[in-house]
Image (cartoon, rainbow, N blue to C red; front, side):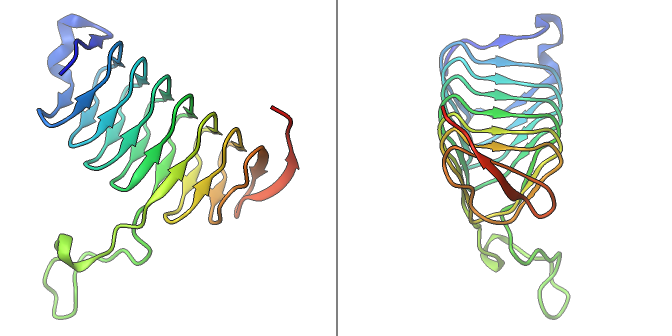
Length: 169
């Protein structure tokens, strides 16, 4: 495990970073963060009230803004911006129980992976459904609900997110 910069060293106990988390060099983690079983690349900044679950991978030089939820199955490439309160979803048919009323376990559902490619930006309050790719250098507008893959170099917005235009990067 690498040395981590905490926003306030006196409050470093306000973070839940499990022993199985792989942290790159120069990672900055703010207060009230919950990280377990994930990988965080070099020079990435994790804002306050962020949860990153097991199996999620965050690249180098990313900014994950406050109140964001990154679930199992999400892979975020290098140089990606994730705005405040972005939510990723990895289950097409979420249920608390299976037939007969027994609580679901890991064996009762399928994790649907999501990929955010290099240089993409996702605006605050967006919801990203599972099984899609957000293309290289694309932009997702704030508050969008992304239900389909976003081509590289494209701006999308709305509910559901629709293409607004291509961009030159």
